[in-house]
Amino acid sequence: MSVRVSFIISVFEQLNYTKRCLSSLKRTLDGKVEYEVLMVDDASEDNSAEFLRSLEAPFQVFFNSERKGFAKNNNLAASKARGEFLCLLNNDVFVEGDWLFPMIKVFEEKEDAGVIGNVQLLAESRKYDHMGMVFGPQGNPRHYGQWFKQRDFCGETKRWSAVTAACCLVRRNDFLKLGGFDEIFINGCEDVDLCLRYNRNGFSNYVVHDSVVLHVKGASAGRKRYNDRNSQILLERWGEEIRRIESVNDQVLHAKNYIFRGFFRPFSINLWKWLEAILIYFRIKRL
Image (cartoon, rainbow, N blue to C red; front, side, top):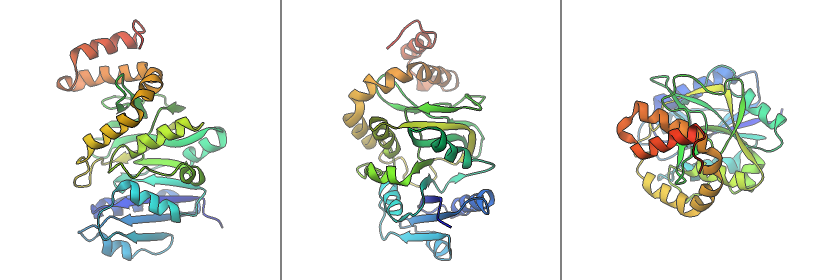
């Protein structure tokens, strides 16, 4: 039987998370779909390498002698994958229930399906962290749904400007044709850049709002070290186009997101921008 889905997992230490991630895959998928798991160990210094060497089929593991980062690791594994679909998955994401097949179904229903994401809860608190991505007026991407008390768009498969690659599904051929992740990014913004390239090449990115997974988020040491650099590269490359297209399309949802942020993290917002968001949300002002 041919492989339907290739799971791509980049690992840097956090062995307990890796074991939990793989256990959740086995529990939800064994006997339901033909799959393989390609993993890249990014020069871990804990016991991860020893554990990964013990894995047998359907696992295939690659070992780096030095850290190369998320983009390079995923591209390497994707180039070796055999599946029709690639599921890009962080090792600190834990899946449950019927999470994968609704994502595959999008490709059967949407001719323009590009990057397919899902709703993500923070693993410890079970608070919402991601229901899709929106772009602010200045072109900066934000996770929609943070601080929300309930899940928006239940029962829907909704188009979004971008989705996080902590857990997402793509057709392997499309991913490779578009060049995979741009390796100029180091552990951040690779997924946003990828989604924007999908947008510009006739695809759309969707979130299946009834597919819900758990994500520890930022578990790897040094995960945020290059955030400012990555953001600068992203905005230099895409800022003008984002402000003209995605920011305009996302303005109401971004406004709602920013309003919620003001309620739950008031010291993290600009008061005037928050008031502007209220005007945009109620359609009194438009970008």
